[in-house]
Length: 81
Image (cartoon, rainbow, N blue to C red; front, side, top):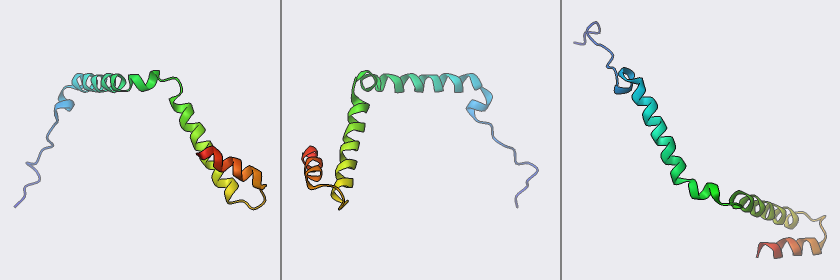
């Protein structure tokens, strides 16, 4: 039924033309840079996210720890608002 001797591996477009693969990858990279250009220029985007994550982590730790003073817990919860 199946003759394995006559089955051949089909070559793809990029297998025959590796220059096209490099060109397509370069175009995709440049498009990704253009799309993200505004976010890359934003001065504090990553710092804001890290600061917010630290505030959430501190509030979670202080509210779930009985050894922390009440005034510290209050300040941690107030900072979330």
